[in-house]
Length: 324
Image (tube, rainbow, N blue to C red; front, side):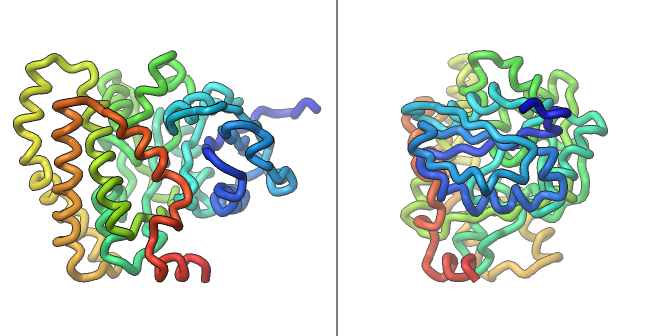
């Protein structure tokens, strides 16, 4: 059947396993105020392994399944889905980040104002534990409890929306660029394109709250970011950043403390989170040192393993709260 109008936005969802991994996310996407204007693009190893339940997708404008085969990384899966998307705008999603109903409509409205990339406001989906807050603040604190900002330097990775053509311009390099989306954002700003943080687009992010997972996540996240950022640098600049990287946790800690004070003025945050935050930033900083010195290594594959089944990486109390 030929649809009368193309979708307004394509929502990119990826999984390495069955459809059940995506069910909670897709329920939130289906609840969008403009769900009938949204195309859902799911990247999965094979359609048969996905075990799609098409009845749950009937309310979307349309949907596509992109078979990635034995895809070794999330960036590769996202790149394949972006290339297959049918809308002029694409929004990246995570199976552990749950958009509120007005999210997609607010993202599109900001794109209509001329912005090439639009990021949402981030909220905490499991706010009871120190480690959840520390992980969230270290990754997303600068996009919490902020007013609208069209002069922002970069936006939340894996949760922002793009004018699709600006991503396709990367060609075969898109997969590498998607390893650290901040690098894309900085490059687009240098080209004069506009980014915007849109606080009316809100998503609730589910955070790791186990120490064993946190240490792997922070070490690999820091290494992946630094290695991706330094991929095209000369040896002199790499050596400079490698030498300076022990200072990075303390510079970041000062910045995140400002975020924490702003957030605390608007919502409760557990006491003691600052000490935990400093500890995980030290681990993140070690990862950055490794990335600047030795490249990304296997960090992208470690992060891919940690991306899914987020409930397995949360304390029991957090899981119970989510299910209420």
